[in-house]
Image (cartoon, rainbow, N blue to C red; front, side):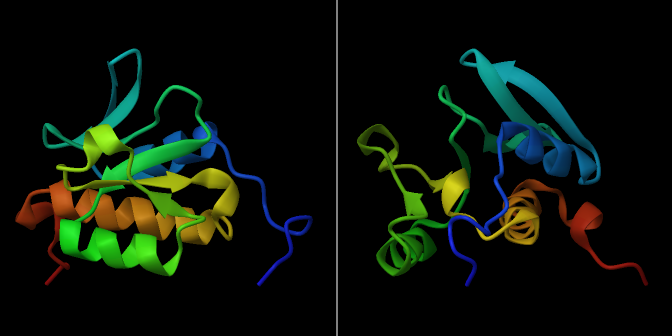
Length: 119
């Protein structure tokens, strides 16, 4: 695992770039910050301070993620009842991990026809 000094520094622009690279993604402003949708369903948002982002995550999996890596994943009290998790950008291991997290959330929001592998 890279040390903090060796770790790639990610920011909200990396979230934007990767989110917009996913098929049929559009950016919208909600709550005065950027959100990203596929087929009218939000799959990522970048809250106020832009040091983290929120993605879709089934609640049972979310609890496991938070327990395994609390320095990376957490849920603010006001979002406890949701199926979303926050991710700290500084805790990620690079753009590959960021891409995987965004892709997973995108797949949860996208229609089946868009996520199905080509035949």
